[in-house]
Amino acid sequence: MRYGIAVFPSKKVQDEANSYRKRYDPHYALIPPHITLKEPFEAEENQIENEIIPELKKISSGTSPFKINIHKVSSFTPVTNTIYLKVERTDEIFTLNEKLHEGILPDNKEYSFVPHITIAQKLSDEEYSDVYGTLSMLKFDLEDKVDRFQLLYQLENGAWSVYETFRLGE
Amino acid sequence: MRYGIAVFPSKKVQDEANSYRKRYDPHYALIPPHITLKEPFEAEENQIENEIIPELKKISSGTSPFKINIHKVSSFTPVTNTIYLKVERTDEIFTLNEKLHEGILPDNKEYSFVPHITIAQKLSDEEYSDVYGTLSMLKFDLEDKVDRFQLLYQLENGAWSVYETFRLGE
Image (cartoon, rainbow over all chains, first blue to last red):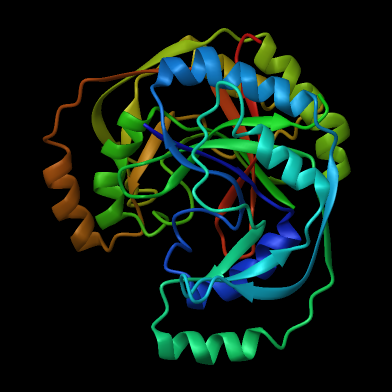
């Protein structure tokens, strides 16, 4: 099965992100707004149960809850036309991301980590210019606390279902 | 915020349910296939953290994982045109449902508990007759293990986001 690890921010941040995703993100219906901590990877269910979940518990209990801030949107152009809420860089989120790619956990990092919440993707170049032109003018003042992450698996229809919640510092 | 409690069955059962939901369930995009254990209720976040989650932990650790079986579809007609995968009645799932409505947990049960996975809803009477006519002929032989339930909250767009996972017997 295909698994991934993500943080779902607070309702307030998710609602804000969804107000854009609804119009601009074709993945709107597949998963709530999230910060991907580990890109999708393949694993067997017994490996998940016997190796990966114990390791994730160790990582979550050894990580204290931390704050994140969002002030503006940014984009992955020219690589893709994805527009996202930029999660300001903090040591805590980078350390957590590192830990999720070490030891027995698959090191499936393809790009360097950019903490973000996608709000628009798969736009045509013209749409992208329009939408980014508008969104890049916006200022946000969102603060949120990350106190958990979730292990998800992907269904055949592309949607993601939560398998387990890991509370930080517990 | 509006919270609810549900079981997400295995990927196999979710994929099976989604093959029907895709066509017949307008809530397809709002939540993966699930068995509702507790209908939506209103609560404050501090009440959730300080009272409800500790109580849910107590209930989950005192409940052993159990099996469920699905053999056929059924419907809530004439109350609503909802069609569902019928989860065979077992003491375990009824006891768990009871516990989630006792003590400090809101007793928000409006109807008697019918364990089910919705696969079609909000159909017109004509659609309902067609779809139920077809689906009611189907035989299923799905067995699944319930070893966790999840506390969810609802976003402004109607979608549900998982807040916490509770493993049975742990």
